[in-house]
Image (cartoon, rainbow over all chains, first blue to last red; front, side, top):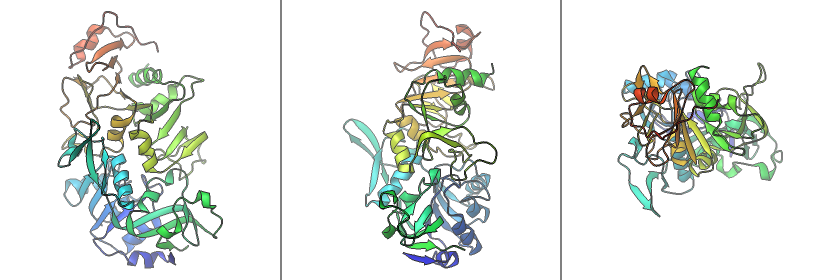
Length: 215
Length: 216
């Protein structure tokens, strides 16, 4: 793990990159990283995030700045700008059931090709997908999701990069921290090694590539 | 009593002590207000919490403790938090005893459509498809009709949420169960006759000899 400034970290992300962004309706989202992505005007991003949040918050900021070319998400209903950009075909949006979304990312981070889920069988979600029967139940084959970068927000990060999360800000963060080539983390607090007890570490330090230093 | 209160009160009677319950947005959220005193129910918020408590007082909200709509909530003593894989493992894995969801249409076989209106409303399914596919018991809480049109239809014209039928629909006019794959009228709302329910319901209903009134 290397501690870097937010400017230096975002400079590593090329336009058109695929990025996973933690958070649920902007809660547990690395806002400082997204602000810097907007400031450096990284265009044509392929974003993987649970939702489009709301304008002005979380991933919503990327839609405000028209930086997204593709979004894989479970819900965009609370961001009218994301909906407008989808209807105007400025953004391609793949809508995925939330349990399937997180399992596809988990599979991507765990070396699996995908998962079998009953969710979506017999619905529009099943279109174009392989169905596999196991012990009399029909499942959809949902393939793994990975990205070049994961932008993760933690509660505590120690000097080595061990992470914990807080309350409902945990959500997709620890799962995404497994599923990208480069993992960039912001934390509410950076603390000395040892403050986080081994039993309390959620994301182990070797998974973290860059920790954003305090501003 | 207004329509929403009738529905929420009646749904609350379906909850049992110890149940792990997930409430959708809209009318389902109101169910928490009518849980009988003394009944210990765990409410899950799918963004990663079991033990959701009331909205905190002004000035006491925590920015990292919210419901699935991003609104501040509190956590009751004994609450637990977890990531989204655990949250949907609980849902898909059959660990959630009851989910209560809103609906756009429910058909004569109990199939639910509640996530999109093609060309008009495409917000995304969020957690709805997983909840209907995986919760032990699925209850739909919705108005019986919208703009004079029955929401209990012969066959859903909107895209389905799941191929798995729901167990119970509670409306402002009736309680309808789908035990044998058929829509069976099990209760009517106070002051509503069986004939009135049948008149505004598009789907064919099985009418037992005795149809009691909701006790709410």
